[in-house]
Structures are given as C-alpha cells and as structure tokens.
Amino acid sequence: MRQPLLTTTPAYQALQAHATDAKGWQLRQLFADDPERFPKLTADAAGLFLDFSKNRITARTLELLVDLARERGVEAQRDAMLSGEKINLTEQRSVLHTALRMPRGKALVVEGQDVNADVHNVLDRMRVFTDKVRNGTWLGASGKPITDIVNIGIGGSDLGPKMAVLALRSFAHPRLTMHFVSNVDGHDMDAVLAKVNHETTLFIVASKTFTTAETMLNAGTARTWFLGRAKEEDLARHFVAVSTNTQAVAAFGIDTDNMFPFWDWVGGRYSVWSAIGLSVALAVGFGYFEALLEGAHAMDEHFRTAPLEENLPVLLALTGFWNREFLGATSLSIAPYHQDLSRFPAYLQQLDMESNGKRVTKSGQPVDTVTCPVVWGECGTNAQHAYFQLLHQGTDIVPIDFIAALRATHDLPGHHDALLANCFAQSEAFMKGKTADEVRAELTAQGLPAAKIDELVPHRTFPGNRPSNTILMEQLTPLTLGALIALYEHKTFVQGVIWDIASFDQWGVELGKVLAKKIQAELEGDVDQAAHDSSTNGLIIMAKAAKLP
Ligand code: F6P
Image (cartoon, rainbow, N blue to C red; front, side, top):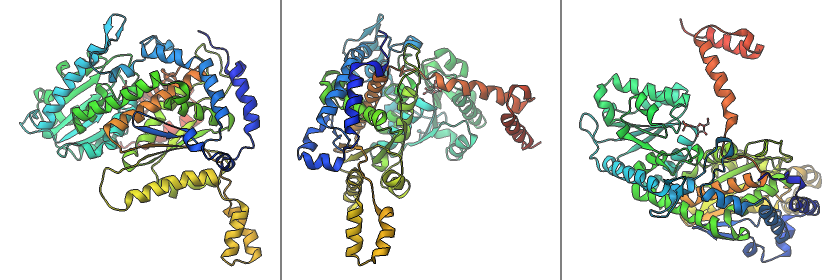
C-alpha cells in the first residue's frame, strides 16, 4: 500500500507539535521531576535490558511515537516480513532472515518452498562439517588436521562472521585460528598468507552472489597460492564455498559437495545466521552457533508478540527516530563497553546504513524528512580518550548507545568494575553535564583567583542534556549476542517502515563498482581521458606513472 509522505500524517504532525514543546526540556529536570523515570522508561526481553530513560522524552512522547509506529503499519509490515511476503519490492524478494533461526519443525512454507526444512538441512550439513574440522577428522590433503581457517568475503559475508567470532572469542576452539580477508587491497591477503601453512589451512569463500569482484579476486589469489604448493586434487580438502550461486561455485573449481547454500531471501547484511556463519560455527562449535540462533529467535518472538510500547526493537527505533528527526542528530555513536564487541559498530554500520541510507520512499518519491543517521563508534573506554570530548562539549548532539555485560567472561580482578563504572559515568555525564555555577563553585573551593575562574568557566562547563541508551546483558554469550544482533536488525526494520523506505536493497553501491571496473581496465591499458573529469584523469595518470616497469 502506498504510504502518505511522513510529514503529512496526523501522528507525525502531533509529534512535531510536541517536539516544539520539548525544545526546552532538560534531562536533569526530567529525572528530578519523576523519581520513577527509570522503571518507567526501561524494558527487557530475550536476556537484554534497555534503559532508554536518558533520552529527551516523556511518557507522552512515547505515546505519540507509538501512535506513529501504528499509523505507519509497523505491526502489519512486521507480520508481512515474518510470513515471507515479498517486502523487498525493488528486487521482488521475501526477507526471511528470521526463518534462519527458527527451531526445527516450525511450519513456514513460502511459494511451495518448505523454508524450515531447507534451513535445517543446511544446518545439519554445517554441524557434520564443523564437528569434523573441530575434532580433527577433517584432514588436509597431506593428512594433517586443520589449524587455520580463512574466511574470504566482504560486506555481509565478512562483517557478521568477523564480529561474531571476535565477540565469542571466549567460547572458541583453542586449535583453530580464524582469519578474515575482505579487502581487494592485496595487503589484506598478503598478511594472512604470510601466517598460514597450506597443509593445515581451510579457505571458506563466502559470497552470496559469488560475483563480488573483491571476493573473486581474493579467492583466485588464495587458489593460486595454494596450487603453487599443492596439487589440483588437493583443493577439495582446503576450499569450501558458501553461496546462493551453485553454478559460479562450480565454475570457480570448488566441489559443490563442499558448498553450503543459502537463498536469495537472505540479505547479505542479515546473513550471519545462514551458512555465511560457517566460520562462526567452526570457531565456537555448532552447539554455540545454535545458541546464537536461539538468542536471535527469542528476540524475534519478542518482536513478533510484544505490544509496541514494550517492544525493545520498537523502542530503540522510536527513540532513535525522535533524536534524528526532532533533535537533528545526524549521527549515532555505538559504544560497546566490551572489548570483544569491538567490531560491533562496524557491523551496525552496514546493517543500518546500507539498509536505511536511502532518499526516496518505496514508491520512488523523494522522502520529506531526514533518514538514517551516520552510525559509527568504538569500544569504551578507548573512545573516551579519543573523541568523547566532542560528544561532551562539541556543537553537535550525538546520541550514544552504550552496550555492556554485567559480568565479564574473564576472571581478572578489578577490571570489570572499572569498565562498568566508566560506562555508567559517561551516560550520567552526557545526561547531567556540569553547569557554570557548579564549575565556579568547584574552582572557588580549589582557591583559584576570581579572574582565573572567569576565564576557565566557559571551557569547563558541560551542556549535558545529551541523549543515550544503555543496553545491558548479564554476560556476552552466544545467546545474548544473538539477541543483540536481532534487536538491531528489527530496530533498522522499524525505522525503515516509519520512513517508508526500501530497507532491503542496496543499489547505492552499484555506481562505484561499475566505475571501478572501467578504471581498472584503464590502469592496465589505455586511459579514456574523455570519459573522466580532470581530477580523476590526474589520479589515474599518477597511478600509471608509479607502476614499476
Ligand atoms: O556491494 C554491497 C554488497 O552487495 C553487500 O550488500 C553484500 O553484503 C556484499 O556486497 C557482499 O556480497 P556477496 O556476499 O554477494 O559477495
């Protein structure tokens, strides 16, 4: 159904009027006015706790935001996605990453395809394969067990597995070292090849399409490297593929018995749950991979059944929408206070920005509001000593999602309290700030002369009133990681519904790919100067001149 433009809808207009009233709100005051703010503006599900009380909202704001979600049809569109309707309109595809984590035996038949049976057939094959590699019965061609696994893939075929393998480091197999090569930059592959032994290395070529230029070049380089040291018939013990494209896998020379398939209804950035997660299953074992799926399924069930006002992904989406739309926040910073989640911001960048970085509605009209913020971030406490200065005292409002585990997965004394203290202190500082009067009183107590105090007060004042969410889990485990990823997936979905944008395509990456192909040919042959501007020509000519004869 064609949606009206967002700003024309009654719920949006009610929010807009409310936002005018909200302009002067101070978080400090909102907390002082209502001692029950924390219990009122927190929720939990699937092992995750969300504190969204440090957003510049009230219970009324939430009501109006939920009205908007209802008016935009979040519930109906969620149900359409979960039941396999072709909600990816520009590619005429279903969007069924949730089916990848459904328990065995749940009925889901889409256009005659028994999706649940297909998913579990592949999971069963993954279990057999990962068990063999992990217990040392899958041997390399010279009879040695595998010690190193190299996942070759990019975008969704890299970011999810790499993030999850790192996040679940504490659960990993001690014999297996995982490597990820994504960049077309040969330095990436070179660094990995320098470390591994061809006799004990397994390459996973992970590509939904099996046509992605970077992955195909990297896979070709790995094969050439391997064949320089082994025989053609040894390939089958050292190369496996994960793809939807059987023909291309066979053409590349990988035995299709060693191919783990998935389906076009799995978007690349939503594919870690599919066979694209093979490297995760190899690292942590199939049991923990299943727990990852289970955690995500628990979040799916919550998303499917919980009322919107208690629904974690919806709440995260709505507060994010409010900050973007009415506070003018152009970016969202992700601050995991957990070193093992250090790739999570990069993972979310693709999830959110490739999904909702769009400027037209589903029906092709220009949107009439802003859409997806820039997503970025880094682990705390490192981020505090790098760019938090700007977040505290800069001119932009940058909302932050703090993510932490209440218990560590290590037993080093002292560290975890220090980590959590910093996490909670930062969200408090962003919320409260420090007034000029407070600074003045502090400096006076230190005995500074009045003139010095006047000079320092503006520099040492913090405006505060800066919004954040805090997401807590008991411990970072496969279960909670699964729930966390699914939380953000559904958040992205809900925001896409509100903006009425096509969240499941990514046409925006195509232009650069086409131009790169042309320029690569010119770097290797003649420059087509007429085809480019003077800057691009200049750069191409410099690169050609720098080539060794
Ligand atoms: O170019 C963008 C993209 O299509 C992503 O959406 C995708 O995750 C990535 O490239 C890799 O694609 P593939 O898995 O087909 O190699």
